[in-house]
Amino acid sequence: MLIVEDSITVSKILKHMIVQDLGYHVDIAPDMSSALTFLEENQYFVVVADLNLPDASDGDIVKLVASYSTPCIVLTSNLDAAQRREILKLSIVDYIPKDKRHSYQYVVKLIDRLYRNQDVKVLVADDSLVSRKFVKMLLEQHLFKVIEANDGEEALAVLQAQPDIQLLITDYNMPKVDGVELVLRVREQFNREDIAIIGLSNDNDESLSAKFIKNGANDFLQKPFVHEEFHCRVLNTLDSLDMMRNLWRKANRDYLTKAYTRRYFFGQYQQNDSEQKLLSVALLDIDFFKKINDTYGHDVGDEVLIEFVQRLENAFAANFTVARFGGEEFVVAFKGLDAIKASLLVNKFREQCESNPIMTSAGDLSVSFSCGVSTVNNETLDHALQRADELLYKAKNAGRNRVVSQ
Ligand SMILES: Nc1nc2c(ncn2[C@@H]2O[C@H](COP(=O)(O)OP(=O)(O)OP(=O)(O)O)[C@@H](O)[C@H]2O)c(=O)[nH]1
Image 1 (cartoon, protein in one colour):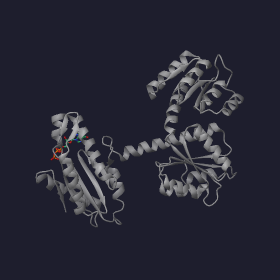
Image 2: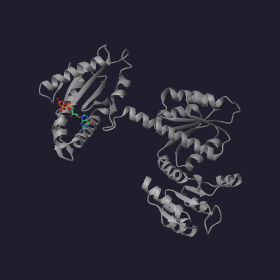
Image 3: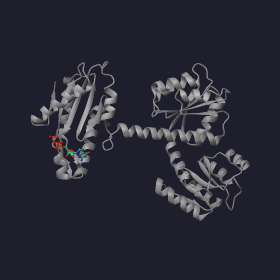
Image 4: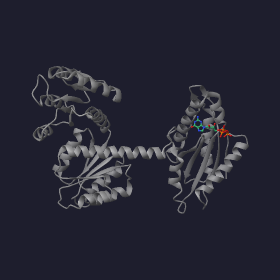
């Protein structure tokens, strides 16, 4: 990235923070003419530029950066209302007054967000072409991948086809399915950690914002809005989505191996006891794992656990749920299979493990596991797991490296 700034102190501080926090390569241009040379010779992801440069009039640097189709973040001194309006007319990512203590951190955060935005899909649902294109243009200033839908019904179809969309921005008044109805229907299928939603409307109905939010939207914006507010709301909403996702991951994914946790496993399979179709559970426990820790150290033990989960997931995760139950014990839920079929699959996996030692920093280690498999028969999941545990115990007692089912 490029910093265009005549104050050596400011550019040094900024460069230091950006290199330290984001690891970017940073060039510094002290004036407009050297910025031009840098821009001619390099392609930048983003430019952070001081609006007042010794060899340029206000705003010239922004026009120069725009002519290279590069996003521009503007550093300014304190602005009055008229100057702020003028700045917002320029096609910039954001402007940041540089005399505030936290301004530099804000610049770093914004650059990081911009970088990540390139992978963030945003769906804009609005039947007005003009309004949709305007929102699209604002989002593209921040490098989002924008997808458009003409009405609520089309938006639902797009979300079905592209469940990795992270943000839905929807207008209220639309034919077929309006914005509030759309939010309601989206929330029937997608949780708050899956997708964030912002409602928009130019309707004068003052109850609309509450309606949107009560039905599951994260935020609401009254049209017409200023660009600055729009960007702030979008960034805040995506920050909370990231936070929700992190919390979800912490609760449901094991820190070391990234396998699903026991909590996730029970959440998925315990609730449906009564309506449970055919389900078998396999409890797998690595043999003599304590010996691996004792002989090669805990870190090597960790490497074995990580690779073992990788193998389990490669073998089963496409169709079944793999979770870490604790220590060196894992569970696989075989939905749709009885214990005989499930144990055939696990046994095949056991043979593969047996013939492929795990590569670790202490060398190749032969690792085997024992397993108990039981079918859930009109009983609680706990009961079936208890039986699988007893079968696992039998497998250990019978000499390990085997699968026992019932
Ligand atoms: N490296 C590492 N070790 C762990 C972790 N969690 C549990 N352990 C260790 O796993 C070992 C489990 O040992 P045991 O329960 O005696 O079982 P085992 O040695 O595998 O023996 P069998 O199950 O009877 O074959 C203990 O030494 C725990 O400290 C972990 O996250 N990382």
